[in-house]
Length: 128
Image (cartoon, rainbow, N blue to C red; front, side, top):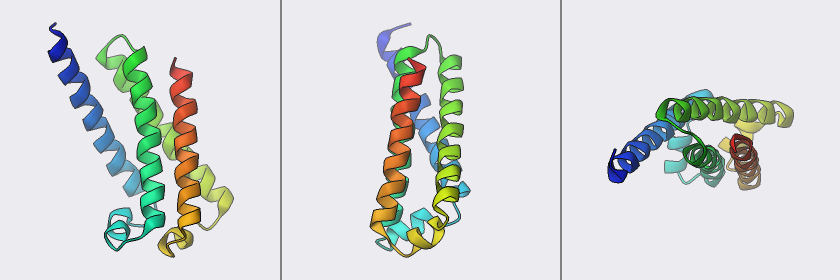
């Protein structure tokens, strides 16, 4: 297969997986991130941005360390589950995520985002 075709297939798959993660994650959370971000809510932007970056880090590692498309998609699915579980555990332990994000507590949103990025780095490293 020509290198450019392989590149385009990986890029398309990664973009689709990122879109699927975005949809799943925003459906999973108890608030409407997109609406909050449109209203200028920095906490929602930091939280969602961190989740997207964390997932993307794992996707990047999976792209580098997998041999075929099916294996890549399976690692991505696992990464998606890990990111969602990390969100669920974190918000349960911190016990006020909805109120804090809707109240535009940027520090709280930043913490959620940082946790998501941290999980993504660890998750991505585990693939290697």
